[in-house]
Picture 1 (cartoon, rainbow, N blue to C red):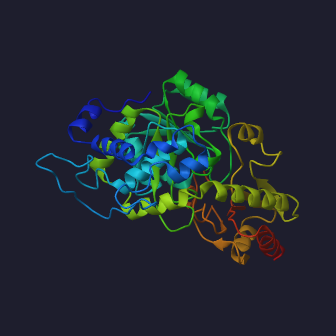
Picture 2: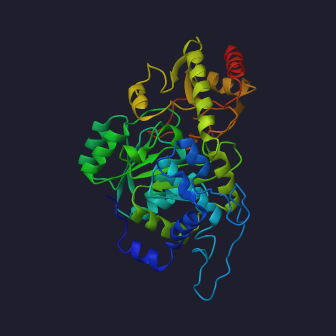
Picture 3: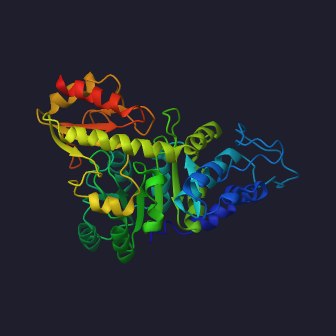
Length: 418
């Protein structure tokens, strides 16, 4: 597995990087956070893990600790381990305890954005000369990070079809990799990777398996239980769920890796602020019921698009015709709220449809309660233009919200009709 640079764990502890974890553990025990243990149902953990009533006031919602520093009881006498909010903050601790409970991880860390989480992870486990495998249809921001940032620091990458475990094995045999980066489903082509099979290939090849679980959310898929080492989320999306906060998270199976990540996050500073952490926690409370509605609406939308004469292909793992349908059915509890489709008439027709919807808002991002539509080639994935990861020009991506599904179907039908 990727061990990163020698001495990071030791130096992290010396610098106090472990204080956030200690604080979180102490706070959780003191507040009775264990009432939502691993044996509790998902919805119960989403509402209660890390979020026990305040012991002083009885408040049922964790307070926003909008604070930068903390009084010490004598030099080094920290109260529950808190000294400075870049290192640890009680509101962020509550979010991290909840995320760890939802993903079944040893530790979670919250960041200022999903890209900040990716950057911290790669800086922690990679060094110059390392090699990484990424999806051949990776999110444009992830591709940009590898191609424009880490390539300058001599971290190379190769794009691989992650839906083919044999292709991953061949790539690892050709050149060992420090990290295998998986999205499943992918953004925006909705490809599905078999996490268990890819995880086995990583264990045999000595690579760290990282799974971007943003599209599925912890409600639909738990990669750590399937053999992943790290789960990454853009918490901006389904976890926050209301298009009002930007954030990211890492959840790890190994506590020592979590310690090293905490050191790097503290050193580089890309932390989630307390109000952002609080907003994300608020969103997580309703994640299960929202995801049920997202999945149901997306399935209806996919069926409608499949039958429309203007549409040449529909990309949705819930369709029996999707090449990853069986794998998705095996490792997911639902097929998600993201649907992509291609237009028979080409790029300009795709762009035109994006401009004609009224209920589907033209905009980037995804996972909010409201429905969004975009043209990936000109918007979220423009950074991959001209590369091997370029997305089809006739592709439209939908983030299907939780509105009345009949209204969504009518809006799309009108837009497709011109």
